[in-house]
Image: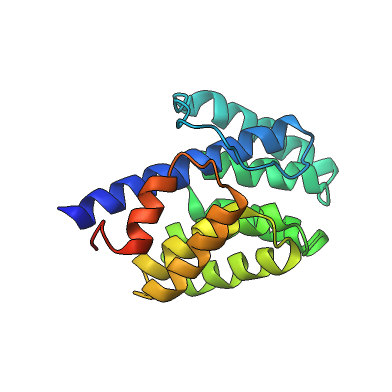
Length: 188
């Protein structure tokens, strides 16, 4: 039961934190979002699939006249991310990364989509690259810890990543949960 609980919580947190990052990222004109330090997890808004699909069609039409528009590529990746369409999101994120391979937030989002598509090795590669580019990007450490623990069975590597995450996000709403995992009291 503890393992199922961890999987549920981890999945919810990844979706929640990534959704926050995407929302802030889009509102700030594609500037990297600062990770949230809220004490409670915000309510997740209901995804309006029809509205997102309409936005996708509009963005695709705009992309026809500006195929190298990095902001549009990232927006399309984000919209497909929201629709849980990992392969399509990866396609747009990769195109944006060809234009700017050092965008740590796009690397994290693309890494999350690689994880969702079952390619944990590529996810780890992208999270580590994001960390190398921006060692203060807490979300990269959190996601790295999830993949190392869940897909690779590397508890020590996960603990190291989560400790760094907590160092960067000392007021994280999941601080207690991660500390339990780190200490081994949450089980696996």
